[in-house]
Length: 126
Image 1 (tube, rainbow, N blue to C red):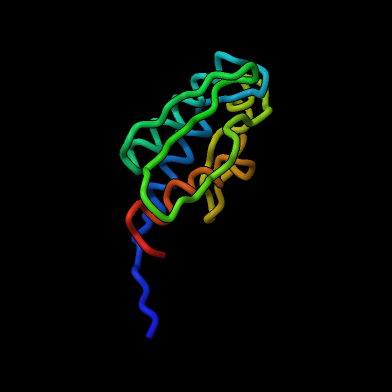
Image 2: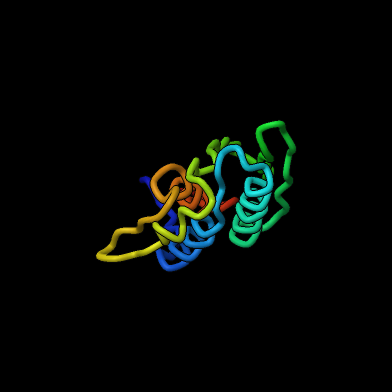
């Protein structure tokens, strides 16, 4: 017999986190904006999963490293830059309408980061 554990996922919390990430503009070559974006990603991860995220500096901008430890080990890989220049958010604000979210980076890759954070929690079994 197979048993499954239900993991509660709040769509409202996911939308809140997606809004937070999208509204932190992150053009690919703007190191100050990328640092702010990395800090925002780290804050979202820490608030949802606990622990401490560490920013790892690189020439291309900071990476966010977070580990919960334990088994199984899973690698989640993504990016938090959105390539759009500063000011794009003024012309293309984050919106949710008719069940669809839009804004710079919603599809690539910020929505994926939110899904990864809100997926199975440490210690849970999908």
